[in-house]
Length: 438
Image 1 (tube, rainbow, N blue to C red):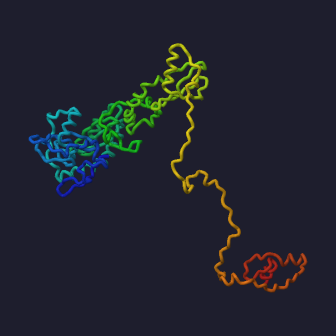
Image 2 (spheres, one colour):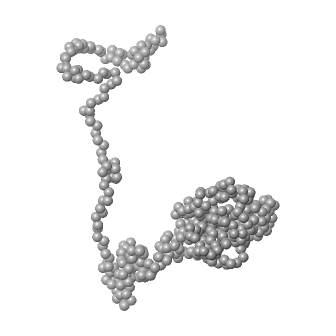
Image 3 (cartoon, rainbow, N blue to C red):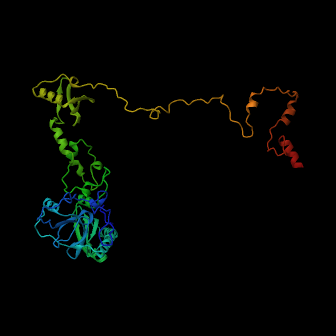
């Protein structure tokens, strides 16, 4: 997830997004610390702390000594001391906050630290970019070589040194792996000095990054630096479903966020009785089925009628437990049940158009009006107002003549025409035979 494609200007300074590496919209701020002392001036006679924090690939950070007193700022690409050769990284923190970070990570601020050689030149940046471009194809080939030797390990990431003199292979494995032959194959295949480092599954997820089930970037790859132990009791206290698929993160372990609200739940559970507590009544024993921690409610059911749950407040449950300790039984839990009053829900919006009604499709369709005026045909001229107001004139009717036909004649002459009106066939098969003779 780390950004490694920031462009550089004519002088070799990084352009990036214009925020000198401290942007908050992409991975340039991976595990970074906001420099809230950047706009403050030091008192007269005070010398700035000469150590800097430099980030390498995927959030790997180390401290270096600025022994040459170079004018460095956040986002500068520098060449640092390495063994052997030199490495290239990006400065993420300068000034007094570096001293604070060193104390936090148990590093002696006055101890011996590797040096910052210089600001990276264009040649250093070109070699560094070429090394980064080789890492993905090398990782695919390295996995093929590891699988070919039937080793129970996974090559998760490869990091080149800035001068391409050494490559570090990060891998994960459940047991100890004998990779002596594999190192020889890597050195012969890639023609580079090889170093192997085993990391845990959580460290692997932190290096590679990703998107969690909450839709945000992984906490371990953005701001979380310490990995505390997480167990299933944290999920039980928070009344979460013990489903491994939902409780496990990208690393395959329990999610670190299960510990975020655990202290709040533990404080709220102090006033609750034990979940396994039984209440003794004259109607029988009752066991707890469910509890709402923040509302202070518990649901109990009789052992002989487990489908009927009764909601009680924690104070009432404590009172019943006190009565049972003195050897007395209460008449029943129904005496402590509060029936909630039905409150009318007020409509908080106005539905002017009726589009939100669930029964808007249940209304019957309106019937068509048969008396509606028919549209005029294209070949029919519209009537003028004079024609519409003129009185109707009675035309003489044509004389009606009736003809009587016998049934035989009707069967011969009244048959439907079986061909189109092209003038050849008139009344069916009889004339068709005549056409064939002609």
